[in-house]
Length: 159
Image 1 (cartoon, rainbow, N blue to C red):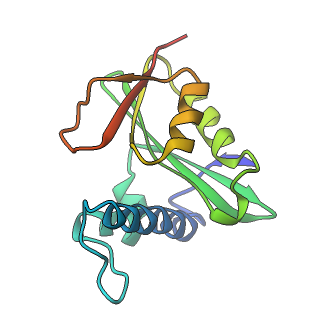
Image 2 (cartoon, rainbow, N blue to C red):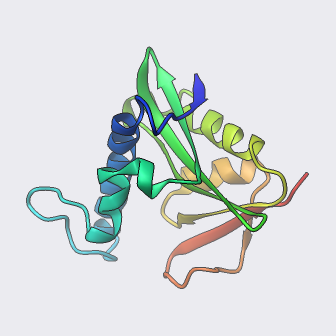
């Protein structure tokens, strides 16, 4: 089931856990790719990410956060930002134990469905599966708007 997160109610802990796992996985991958130092011995995220985990209600104020649930447990998350008519998908993540069951696809489809107009996102080039999913949903590669090396920027034109 995909639903909008209630960040003023019962969902901040689930969003925090899902986003935290996404960020830890991403940082571990960036370290493996030589783009970031390893997380410290306690697994603490870099300061720039901690607010999203410590207080998702404040970090995502004004954004749309969607959750995937399997058997009543948060199994995925996606954050949709819309500012001045431009929409961006961020933090799309499905728990490793549910991957391959369509959770990521369902989250992506739900995120695109709440947006009018073009939708953009960025993804690391080593995430071939994610890039394939995005391309299957009509996203195309465009010149990078973010200066970080190895980041693939994509846009799905409005339909």
